[in-house]
Length: 294
Image (cartoon, rainbow, N blue to C red; front, side):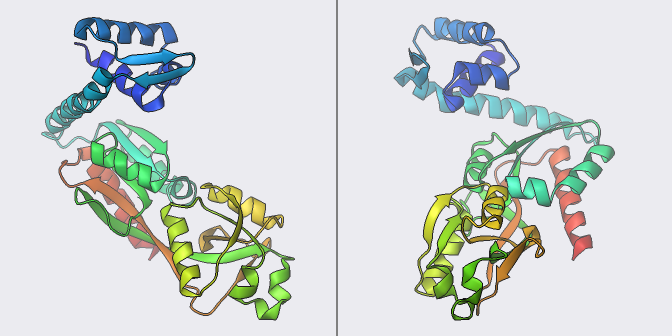
């Protein structure tokens, strides 16, 4: 059994697509199909059901998936242990990162890290915080830089780096500013555009509104905070954003009594996995960078 065959199998299972997996692995679709055919021949079973563009795991495929992940994780850990015998910082570093942190917190840190450790191959995947936690927990990502969960899984360790204050904001000409002294109750009578329900950020917002017996009239949801800012700035609705994103020449902030909504941003890693030299160097770079800004 070849490792490359298992890699192809996992990518197809996770993406639900041969073509997407081929793109991820920089292969042609016939090449990745051949790898799966060889794997199916070795096990003498069918691993995927193919119906048009839809690809689903068969029962043997579902049984193989966690074992395939375990094999690749063990191989990666073995490689990491050998590399860690020396002091050299090198190898692959897989990071799961939220879009907001990647855009607003990491650029200078990543540039410095890349210039300092040019033997490290950085691989960043942008995703929601909850999805990033899953990748760290199953070993796909070595660490994540995300909005920290209030109650992380027992297998995860979190380290706070930033305190991210959130504010209510809207267009400069938003009518709520002049209605009833711009109260929260007045604001929530107008349309809102907010992060997707179920995300960590949306839960913080909903808890705040619940405490004040208010409910948002949500007309649009998206996890892309840059999109929320743009749509709110042109008057589509009020929103809640990290204060760091607000330019008060373009948007207004609604200040309410006890309007303290904040997120904790930082590092999440798996307590059952020792960090590679590259990951330890990244943690040190992040901590050093945040300490100098406080």
